[in-house]
Image (cartoon, rainbow, N blue to C red; front, side, top):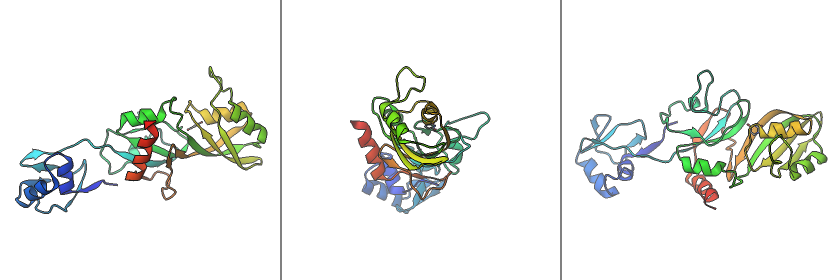
Length: 242
Ligand code: URA
């Protein structure tokens, strides 16, 4: 997936001039894209890929990037790894190596992962003080009960200094294998697996379906990704301002 933008918008965002000034520059032949003089302001350029020169000076600018990935099982939530495939390796076509995942999902966990180059926003979304809700769907080996719901609401001892924060547990199907939805407000290492271990059950499938105000786009198959919309970016920025 490439991020495309009109040439005149690119130059204006790169502080070359106003939209009408840069249009004039383009029409006068003062702008090159990948070495070629281009006279069409509406030409689509690929941000971070095409080389754009105005009056022979390269125009680059730092943009905030937000990508929603449906993480598949089998890849690690890291930027680099010696042996394992990482979530950044899934961004075929994407040459932005300044991105990183906002938080981690276990290697075998699927679902919503936000990739960004906005360190402050990522930090705020993950801050224990902000208590951003994370919702997961899970399949559990064993019968999940109302008792478990009460325990999770009170907080569970997972061997940390404190109990976990109250978590909402919704039972979708109870049986030898149960299906549940759980909302947690912190992100301790293997948190959900450890919470179920604490009530003698085992997570056999885990998928994150939302992260704060962001819901996983159901059109994204595991391994697929897309840029956040302006509206979604507004929502996550709103979430971390408070
Ligand atoms: N809890 C887990 O146990 N694993 C995850 O990947 C996320 C939450």
